[in-house]
Length: 426
Ligand code: FAD
Image (cartoon, rainbow, N blue to C red; front, side):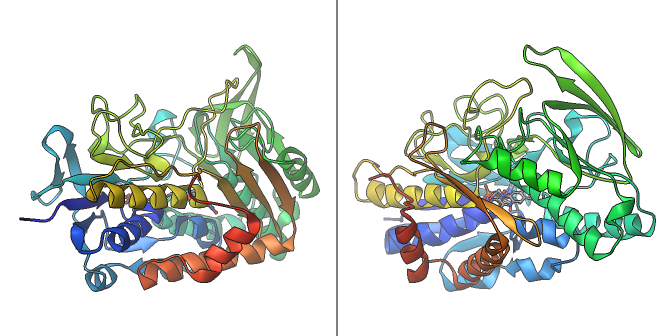
């Protein structure tokens, strides 16, 4: 009898580790295969460093095929064109179809730059750090900018669900400009859909409001909250500031010589618009076991899953899915597939704890939110130089894990245990 086949779709932060953890959990009881869009893994959290050349792109990338071969996990870099969920089949871009018994969707975000005229690196006027190739192009644009400095606008647009990297990048640019001794020539504005600085899509964590306001003030970065970007032109961003109730309180025309705005996210085309599988934005619907209710053989993890916002805000603000939260989803799915293959019901639930390190180059802000939505059992934030060092350690540890083919090293388990951070609900 042939073995059940588990396919993981998307070799990003969540999917790569998921393939390793699932293979380790199911062993010889199932075949595991990765359907990736590329043969290279990129560590997205280091993209802000790539954009100011603190990292070379190659330093944060890992060539995956030999590692997957060693782990006896099937691998293709053809990418999925379309999921045919009713047929349990993935149609790939090279014309081949892959059947599965279980599918784990980890496709990350589709970047919705097209929702705002003039936004983004392709047809627009702002740079991006969402992909490593974008961050490389942003570094080229920054090289040109420093030859002829002017105003900078950084932030996250309406509907964005990722705010930490916007703060990180604003502070990193400030640090780099001070190192180059041209900060005095660069007025900076932080533009965000959040209702207040430090909301982060989580209604704040610990004292992130005061911490991040004070960082922005100390660095002479002005801010606009409740911001809706209406249009971007070459060198000019048009922004509406929205009051409680939805009326336009003020409008701003912000000139810029360099701008990075995080876009809203939505589900990728290969899996969107499937009745019962996705919500209207194309995010995968999952239950507390990371399983889709309409297609129970499909699991979802990472940025591609649907999580409702923390509450109403004047401008739409999404909930972030941070690295550790994603790792907790991975661990739950591996445990649930293990149980299912043994004929048992899945019981593992991820904690979805938000742990984040936002590096500013010369310091940073860290936070832990357990659970994600307030009121919380753990609601902690702090700042200091140690955060910069911790972020470097996170990068090294994660890339090592991808290169080694997974496994939660003893020191990781020990460190998380000491901090009282768990991946699964007990
Ligand atoms: P991704 O890592 O984006 O992976 C998705 C993968 O799916 C990609 O490789 C993509 O190519 C692939 N894919 C998509 N469509 C297909 C298809 N049709 N077929 C095959 N493959 C496909 N979190 C933190 O905790 N700490 C941080 O410091 C941090 N920094 C961040 C910085 C930035 C700039 C961004 C954007 C996010 C950051 N995050 C951070 C949030 C989050 O941890 C990352 O976005 C993380 O990469 C998300 O993991 P993921 O697996 O869900 O998606």
